[in-house]
Image 1 (tube, rainbow, N blue to C red):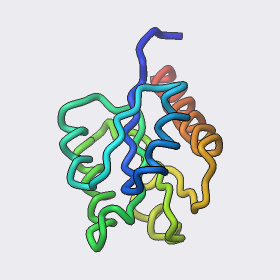
Image 2: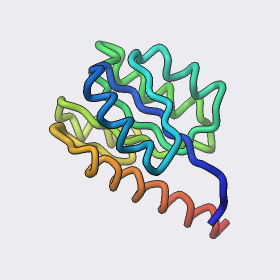
Image 3: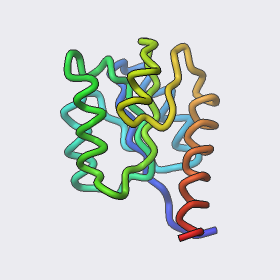
Length: 129
């Protein structure tokens, strides 16, 4: 296993939830936690991100646009995008490219397992290339 530390981008507008998720996720990965949707693209432009966790409610009316922008900005190396939202619009999320869609309430442990599953899948795919 490589010593490279994978970074996750976490968009969660609720301070307490963001802290809770970041604390659990940071046991396994480096976490860049942001509060506003506008910060997501800036982070993606400046850092190598292994997975993205989005609460699309933070993006307001532009929530789905944010998902497509993340995919577009990442190009051929799109990291897994895990939506963790209070709004159950799984069909639309998957249609627009989400890797996984979790409907809140989601425990920090459940989120960690989902991120690990996608990062493991991505790692195996890279090893096969």
